[in-house]
Image (tube, rainbow, N blue to C red; front, side):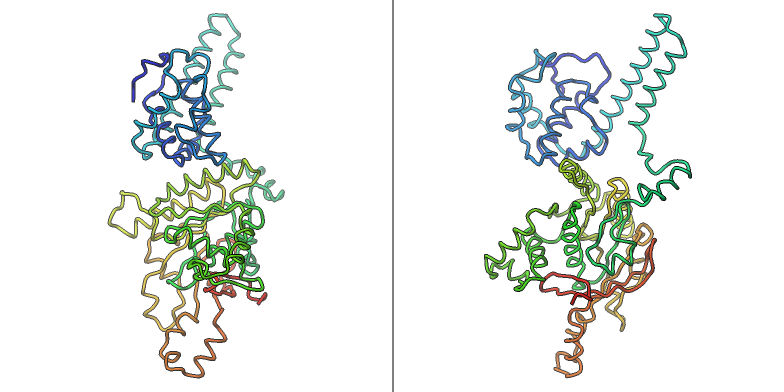
Length: 467
């Protein structure tokens, strides 16, 4: 859209089409705002003042949790877009046009980067103008240069990457002694033995891989830990690219009630067989937890990061911070077109994207991964790092790799159990709730096996010693 006949002409460098495209995309798909905020876009970066006001209002409403549409947005501008825009078309008509002519959210990140860069260029031009005026006014050169460098440095800081992890050795060493930035933000996994193995819990900026064959309990441990993290007050973003929202919720409710006097199987909750009052009790206990669920299928790692960025902003407004992003699971994350057809490189790029996301969002990322059938061909079906190496550079990018193994899963399907062998049935009863988390890579802790209690029917995991 480039019909600016109803808007005041801009005498500065800018791209009106990019601004209109970005605003329209965000109005149509509110999640697209995350691409703009991740680029550091601010209302003052827009060359058209009306666009800056629209962006500010979009950001205010969306980060407050509201669903924004042209109807809700126009209510914020009953008198138009403010002073200086008197010749503009009525705000309701202009907002409707932005939404109607929006095409896709794919270009939002590019639009945001371009708007941001052009704003920086306008700032540099303004510095040049200020120096010219200083010369005309015979201002002292040292003062004029000092002011110019101050403004240029401000612009540079906005256009450069965050240097929070850069600094002198003395500065970073002091942070370590203070237990502040260098140590990072850590939240408990909710499982004491696992916390001990990974230096206290899920640590901001780190990528954790939990891998295993189907039926080993990957989703169970992720969702149980998500609930436990939220109990501490830290925010959780949980992405399930496999399960439906109702099944995911049923699993969380079952886990919440697993330690109660009358636990419920999650399949009974999903099917509607569980007592309604008991389900309501579980829902009420979970309702206040800072957990955000997203069951949208086919998300890319970039889209997950953009959505998690929005979640982090909403949590910050409520005085909380995002502690962990759980992604279930790697094989269902949509790969970019760059390596189409090369599964190894696709998985490598997704894992690297997850690691970068952990650092950019300053939170832990727990990425679940499915192992191939090669494990099933061995007598000892406990996975090893060699099983993961067949899936690209996942091991290389991860800070932690843990494999999940349940002997009971395989024993229950063995010929001995099917033929009612007494020893096999006794052994099955003994290990029915055993879950091994085999730590094969751990940057800040030992490699070991963490033994946990697990009840798959209840979708629950707990510390083994509590049982």
